[in-house]
Image 1 (tube, rainbow, N blue to C red):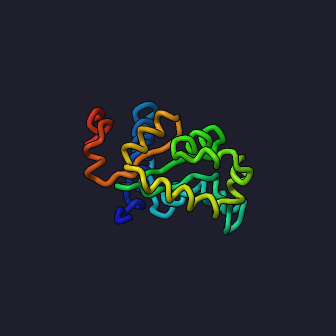
Image 2: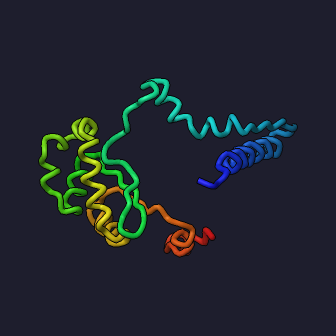
Image 3: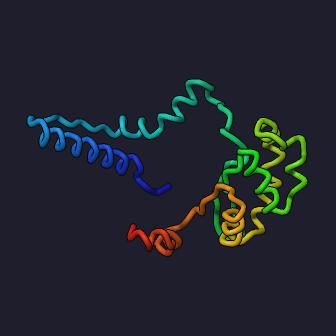
Length: 166
């Protein structure tokens, strides 16, 4: 991903530890020794996946289907429609209402079982949509989604501008 995530995460943990130590010093006095480790920090970030690996083994099941990053006509979009109401709404948005009633895909468990059949159907349909149009349709249908922005799209995003993030 061309970003040194481990360094950024460790810096955030260092900041949190230093702020906590400074607060304790201001309220109770005394000093604190702060130790921050790259290994510990990146391990903490991955704790959920480590627990999943421990409980389910090396080949754990995905948390739901469809939950993925999809290529659109002009970008990428993450979609999370693992819950049945979101699934039905996604099928309506994509013009695939027959999939919502198909017994192979009618429940979350069934979608997991038939993921290999389902995902190519969805990927083909999503790829025909311009990203912003699909975003608007998914928002109106209350389907969980988010754009995968490049830097330019991030900088131009209305929320980024409104909050002064950059």
